[in-house]
Length: 350
Image (cartoon, rainbow, N blue to C red; front, side, top):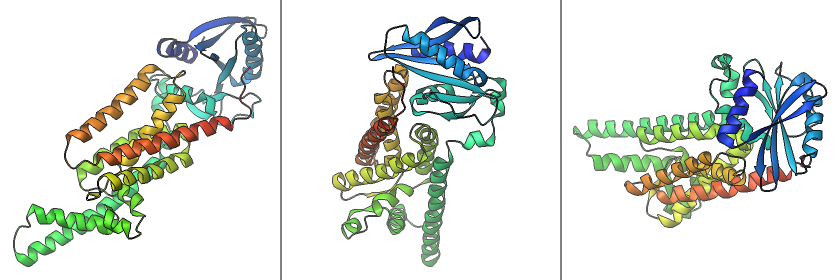
């Protein structure tokens, strides 16, 4: 058993409560190994195979699993020697480039395995030389959103400072903080902040644009850092298109609840949408709870609870927007993930 197989099987056993079964391979003329996890509706099986031997390994594993007398799902981890791999007959596969263990492709049923693989350190020394393409693989939508936020923040800050500087020169005095705050609010409203009076006049686009504006450096820095951490994981699970839809819909649901609960507030910030992404992660964790480590789910719930608690403990935090974002992301994420599975006509459950 090579280093990768040993390392990955160890992780499945120690973190995910799998156990290893061995069976005789007529092709190899020795024993082969498969990882198995007991579920309520059957067993979830993981087999690691080289590209050249994938079909034989798959067929032999299928024959062995049928002898166990339980419903099963066989998931193949295929080690490929190139960035491209020929079409495979089997469903439920994740293809990995064996030189650096980068993931080439992944079927929806293997998403929990992909997340697990991405969180395993030291699979190979070559992992340190990760390519630029791999770095950007799941980050393009996230980096695009971050760039838009930074550009708009720079524009609004320059506009605010120009107005403050002009007032200071005109009146030869230091501008009081109350006036600075008023100027900031005026500029943010001009650029699309959530302001109920204007939304009531038909400016519904503010339900989205307010999520791309921020009121200070710490505000944008904390939100963009959170987005950078969470965004790529959403991309991995749901794909780029669904990720963007979840983000935008969470903007709308977060601002809508703020509109109802805080009618007199002027609100900006991406935190509602980011809470929506957390909600989508929670939906994924709920659906895949039998396959995921309990620590993953508990850690996610703790992060959400801590962030909500922080919001409730501080002034000028729009907690209604956070709750609205979680609700939107949770509901849409649940629907999307269920649809992704229902569209898998070739899912192999025996």
